Structure formats: C-alpha cells, structure tokens
Image: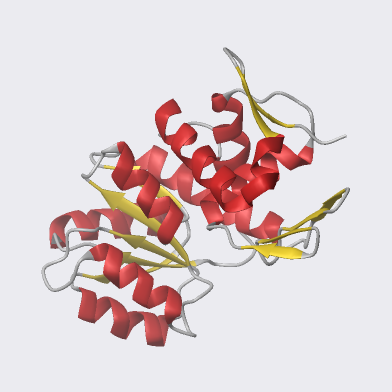
Length: 228
C-alpha cells in the first residue's frame, strides 16, 4: 500500500488484542493497541489513526459511547470506526451502523475476513473522497459530505442510510435486491440480514418525508428509487 494506514485496536483482552495487532502488522499497517477506553483516547490523540477497530465490551466505558466521543473529537472525527463485537443481534448492528460505525464485524472472526473487510472500508473512504455528486431532478446527493438535498431542503441521514440511498440513486428506477444493496453500499460478504436492510429503508423513508414514497418496494425482488 502506498500510504501506510494507521489502525488503533481497542480490545480489553490483551491476548486477543496482541493477536489482532500481529495480523494487521503482517498486512503492512501501522498499529497501536489500547485495552481501555481511557487508553484509547490517549493513543488516538497522539497516533491520529485512519481507522479504529473497536471492541464494545470495555472495562471502563461502553464502546458505543466511546465511539461517539471519538467522532466528536477534532483529531479523530474523520477516522473510520469498525466495531468488532460478540453482539450479533440485528438491532445492535443496525443501531451501530446508524449512529457511529462504518462497519460491524461479529466475533469470532477469521483473520483473512477481518483484513479483507478493513481493506474494503478503507477503499470505500478513498472512493468517497472523489467528491461524487448525484443530481436527479430536484434531488442532490453529495458523497463527499454525506449530504442530501431535496427541493432545497436539507435531509440529515446517518452514513449507513446515506450509503443505501446513494446506491439506489446511482441507477434510478433499477431494481436492487437486498443482497445487491448490501454488496454495493457496504461490500461483498457484509454480514447483515434482510430484516436489517428493511429497517434501514424504513428509517430513510421516514426522514425523507413525502419524498420517501419514491423508494418503492418491489415484492419478491427488492427496492428501487423511482424517479423519472
């Protein structure tokens, strides 16, 4: 890799953390390990990571709360956050993606899967840095700022919601299966259920208000953004 990405591993189990660090160093990353939330914040300030691999089960702070604090910090606001957790409930995953996480992996994990997913997340960020804007009628989606405007009204979406809507808007009127939405928005092999996608679509429709009707459900096939 041309740029040596910096990854901060936040894992309360020191043995698991060291194993993860070794796996990532073998892939050429610059890696630091923190075993508590306090240590993670200290390392983040000095290390300025590109990506934070975060275990939610920390001894001194809830991992979700720590993630939100890191997103508010000027040093780490643009850092990618990938959750690594034993919590595999659909609702936990969706809430994580809606609120603070760029990706979510469940334990136990295979090293090759972990590194593949981290590479995919870093690639997506690089692609998004190309400032791609979609304009459809009075809709405007700006990938660089994750912003949506419809009829000059600004719509606030989470990153996960924006990724899904941007995927649908990339080819309006095309029908996307749930699997295709996941693959295009999050990457191949992303572990999320059809129910979780449906929950995210419902949230997007609600936030879009009257414009939510343009996201159509095609029974037995998936979804499409129906714009002429």
